[in-house]
Amino acid sequence: MNPQEFGAYLQCYKNPYATYKCLESFRKFYPDNTVVLLSDNGYDYTEMAKYFKCVYIHSNENILLTYNNLNDSDKFENSFKLIERIVNAFELCYEEYVMWLEDDVSINKTITDVFRYDLNGFCPNRISDQSIQRLQEKHNLDTNKKYHFTGHGGSVFNKKFFIESMKNKQLIHDIIENWGYYDFPSNIGQDFLFSVIITLYGGTIGPYQGHYDCYNGLNRDITVQHQYKVWYNVPLPNELKCLIKEDEPIKNNIEKKKKKHKTKNAIYIKKL
Image 1: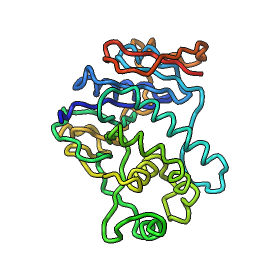
Image 2: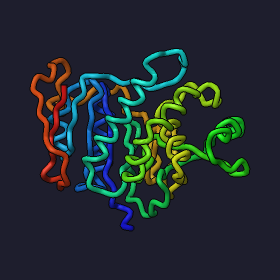
Image 3: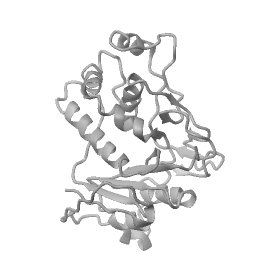
């Protein structure tokens, strides 16, 4: 597989210069790969999407996904809404794989490795032994195996496998309902959720070369760097302010059919 055969998904909110710098770094090395830019009830990024040749989706609903309140009745609704959102976004990418971008991701070099897993990414953390033992009561897992999780910025999903695994509503409902019993972390949301779904659906998770977390400034020895937050809360320069609208609501509702497309003919989608 050509390691460049991947699209990208970036969910943004109200940190426009960080969003801009992430897209700028991606487009430097991947000028024609599909990028889906979704505003999570944040600013209107229509012009920025056009500037970087992105597919654009504007959502007027902010979806926050953590499980620190296990009695929250919205945990099921929010989880399934988020999954539906991401599946719809992934389906707009014609590539076989999709990179999960975040505002603190910088692409510093071209990826030279291939994607070997259903979820590829830096994964030093693993699902606890206690969690695996409890999961084994319902699911077929090897207690002698160490199961890792990833899914943060720079991780790369096998699009087809991700979409198929997210159709298993019964599995997902069990994971959410028994989050506390399974001893899952309460301060981690979608990264951990997606990793567990993929694992229990029979998928594979592992690293690809060049993807790492690094907090100490830009590290050009890293190919795909996560935790690069230098542009957070930095205002857009005056010459770039035309790329967002801060206060004007999205009034029109444009729906386009999902279809394969080239980025140079990007589809722009606005949803209420």
